[in-house]
Length: 550
Ligand code: ATP
Image 1 (cartoon, protein in one colour):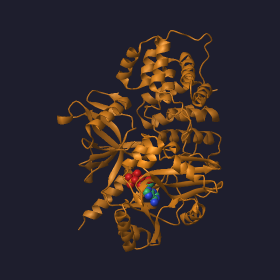
Image 2 (cartoon, helix red, strand yellow):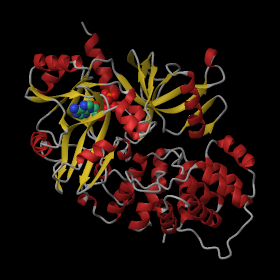
Image 3 (cartoon, protein in one colour):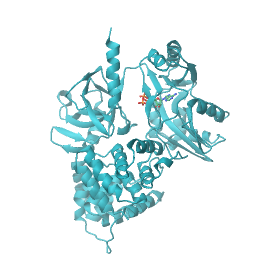
Image 4 (cartoon, protein in one colour):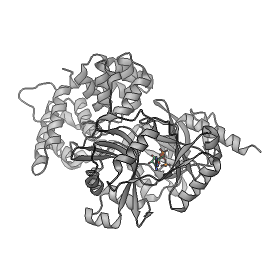
């Protein structure tokens, strides 16, 4: 049985080395010594999760419960604890500092194992309703009483989903490949398909990576579209008939229906069924078991409403009746990945779309509006039509394409009116000047390059005061190293930046710099793995050279 102490000390070593390769090496060596069950648990815990991704079961152990328990076992006052917490902005680190002061000791001290911790987390998840807080407190207390300070830190980091040791999922995937001598791309593909790194580790450890399958009620990652600039670029690239679909502006949603049960997942693979109960109820009308992909759009009287209406639904600000009246939605479906237990995602879109039409008949669900198009003129005309109906533009798809979970490629291309923006992740922060003096408002941000992040610029403006405050709290909490004027931040906060152009630059390790970057929005809906890549920056750089030529 893998010991939890060994897990915690491995993560401590990962945390204290800054080199990515070294982090991967330490983790892979550790994983090599674990059996399947522990490999699953350790990798899942290392990414800050107590349960499988997409699971509707959460331990639901909030800050106040954790602080209560720490209080209970250390005898410290809430004020003492909150002082330590404020120092770090991280409850796990605070616990590590105060736990040695614990008074009670269990009579028989039994070391924590990965298995025992996992079992306790499961029990905490299963405890629901009245009295459950008490039960959870009891479980947490008994674990913390058996834990060393470092173990306590990691137990709490998992419960609060705040790992912050510079170990993004991409590095865990690399460590799995290295530990079991597997091809990195194969492991990455399995991770994108299964959506949960723990399951990947289990399959890899068992030598069954090639057997991974889609499964109903377990989310998979979403296929993404690459941007192209003009209808001409699209027509010239393909030179054949394509499917031009309306690009809806809503939330991407994956719907799983298995017998009488329905679950809906977001792009972060979170269960969002409770936000859209009317869609879940209507989906029971499908005669078959299905795995669908589509976009949930705020929609009334045949027209889309503003995106803000959806935010209310997602945050579940109102009761359901009210929400449905104020922000009615429609689910536009555009793909079918599984039908009655049969995987379809490798089959061409042409076939999937045809089957989708058949299974959706009579269910009341709308298929995304789609028209065949081949020439630049046809694409341009459909683009204008989509815009005039209040939609964002087009997603143009190759009818011969498979569905590639989690991959952004040219099988799907998107055409929008707007100028380019990049989704980037914050890796550093500084105090601002002038109007923003003394506030953490200047961000250094990066794009993804494999499992690493490369800096591409700094941005100073674009957010409201309230947003700057909100970000400052998160940045403090995500700080790995603070040398006074500059904070190195664990890559977790995603923002969307607009810019005027891209230049080559030796100043940043990406080799590029954005000219006049400004923050367009905070993208809480995206994970660091989903930010734009260095490759895309290179493409944009090349394409702007083409555009600026006479
Ligand atoms: P954007 O900000 O343009 O939505 P993104 O980075 O969030 O970009 P992309 O995958 O690059 O996501 O853009 C495609 C997105 O457009 C999809 O994720 C999906 O949410 C949405 N979308 C709307 N209509 C369609 C459609 N018919 N087919 C595929 N995706 C669609």
